Length: 119
Image (cartoon, rainbow, N blue to C red; front, side):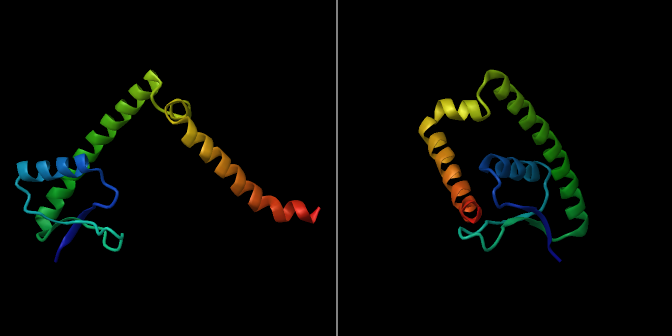
């Protein structure tokens, strides 16, 4: 019976490539199904063998721990350089941020309008 190891929906290409490389390097007998364009099927990495599934899950867990610490470190470096957060977005894309703030105001206004008319 197939074992689903990992969902590939919303997985960046570099992460999926790293996992493929890991499985190839460790000689995990896996197969891959791509996620559908319309979001109907999730796609993923699969194996058939129970023992192979357990080994692959352990490899994935180790990879995910390493990737998480790497991504956190990169995020902290970006924050320290001032390249992350709302201030950074405002500096890089002022019109987009202004449009988002206006849209948020309109949505809140329309949502509160019935309550404001009651009083």
